[in-house]
Length: 230
Ligand SMILES: [Zn+2]
Image (cartoon, rainbow, N blue to C red; front, side, top):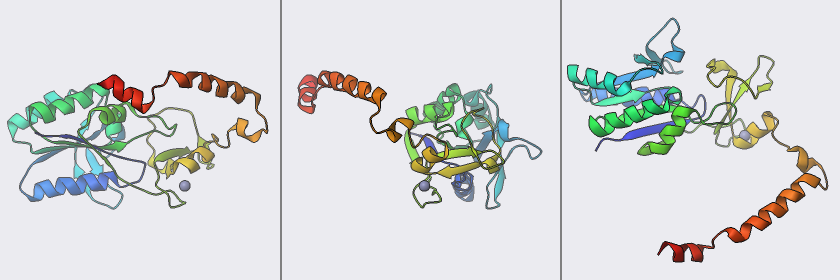
């Protein structure tokens, strides 16, 4: 059975480098891989996956209206494809993720997707959300924050260095994005310290606390859950 893989990371973790290395390994064994990247990145040098360390390869550009199952099936009939690689997979639509799942399931071709997990607002990209939901294998490509902790978040900075917390999800100027650990991301985006934690006796959160208490008895204890599942 062929699988749908999702390798996710924050910005500048070397996703494209990992993709190109894996594709190279296939080609080296005489196998044929088909590479895709988002048309959103296409500028003058269209249809190429380029890594920051200087290696690159030709790639097909996919747009949001392309049916990737139909496309890959057509190419597969022309000449056997052993593996499909998709860069910038966060920009896939949910439907396209299912099309890629069918490539793995129906055509028997493994599909390896690489992309960002969340945007600069800390929210999942649609493509990443669907991949996290249905991919067979999830892999994290790690990178680190300036503090040395694992960076899982991306902050978008204005030219003056200030963090931008609102705006279009699909803005792709790489230089404006920095990967941070969650705690530094919350500080830089102004979410921490939370205003209520600065006050000695906050009035509003006290109400919330009692609401949580009331809700608790409704939850099942582990023993109850075990009994219920029998
Ligand atoms: Zn940090």
